[in-house]
Image (tube, rainbow, N blue to C red):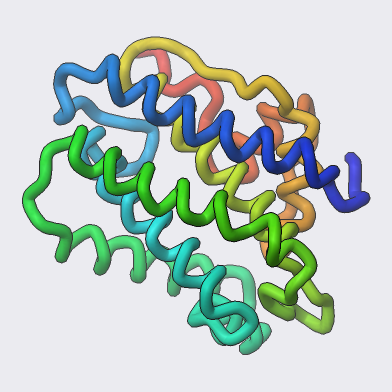
Length: 208
């Protein structure tokens, strides 16, 4: 697996690809109450999560290197603890969202994701967080954002009964190592490895 920092131009392009894929898939959605590969989430919930994550990423970027995320990782807690804390945050933020439609949530996602894209090139080498003695930059975390958007594009596609595969899966493998340092990457083909490392089953929905 590639462990060198991902190329900046490829990260920026991959980021925009992910945002665009989410918007395009949202435009095809008719029923926002269909199940998704994300446990217990319907498509409307996934849209709300995307809005929350994009807003959080923008906040983390603006507050770097003293963001809530940086303080969480500075604790050097076990991976399981980090996962639980982030899952609780996701659930809490989703629970207090206003009763918006799916398209409204995706529009809000696009606004925050676009603002992040505008800011990150000039902040690329700034420290984003320090985890177990290693400095991770804004550019590294941009890779994590790429992973997030493309994984959720896959979730949306599967919920809509189709499939999705990113144009540059090798970039996402490298981005995972630098942007998601607390989780090991699964073995296997690049995109499938990313899916499995994130806890997804590439064959979802499983045959009856």
